[in-house]
Length: 79
Image 1: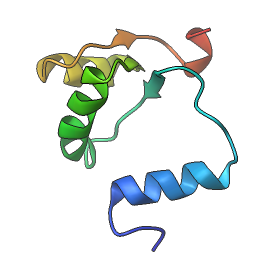
Image 2: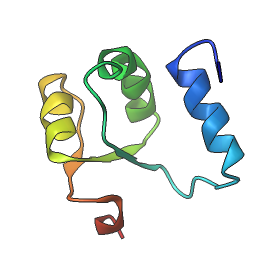
Image 3: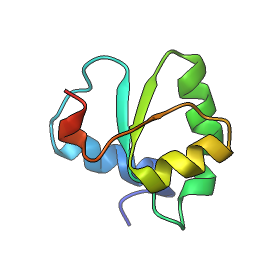
Image 4: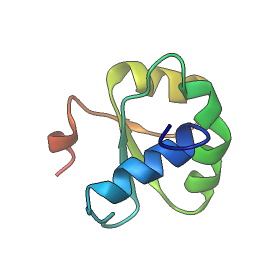
């Protein structure tokens, strides 16, 4: 196991890429299994000023949960 849960696994995998987060922008393409577990953390990030970009399907889910995002076709479309 990489972590005890999805969040720990995500952060461990992110750290292994040695990439840095620039600004408070996040692109998301959430799968069916894990998306409900991210609702509360996404609300927290939203209150902290993060801006979300997402695929069409993820956008529909986030909108249904009253989480603001911008639908884009790919991460490269964010600019």
